[in-house]
Length: 145
Image 1 (cartoon, rainbow, N blue to C red):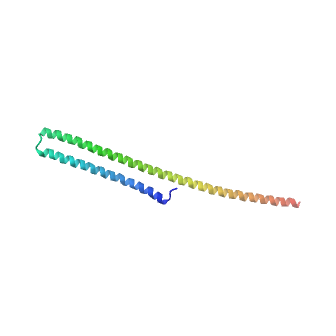
Image 2 (image 1 turned 120 degrees about the vertical axis):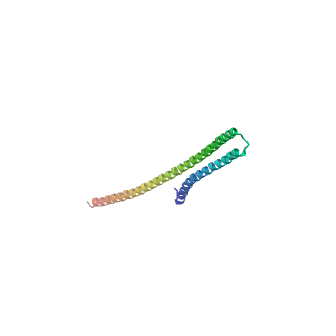
Image 3 (image 1 turned 30 degrees about the horizontal axis):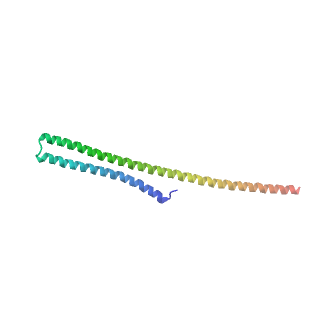
């Protein structure tokens, strides 16, 4: 059975998982910002360099935007995988806590049952003692006859 320290550790783990989810969101947003900033700089360079024709600039910008969207999709996929993993960990932690509560309740019921059995056994012993005493008194009465 878990003691209070172990239960506190489980709760800390759940709290950490909640913060991990927030951290992952911040990491994802930061990664998207980095991707956008990089491709914005690249696009600005292509537009202002004067090296390319208008048609080439349009082709390069379309290609850059396709790559940008792919990179953002990869970042989103990584973010969603991390969130799924964190949620699985939270579910496992919740299942562990539920099972621990059920185990403590089962142990409590066993303790109550053992206590009831002890009380019942004590009562039976008392009744047997009374019956033996009654038998003894009855046998004494018969001896007097």
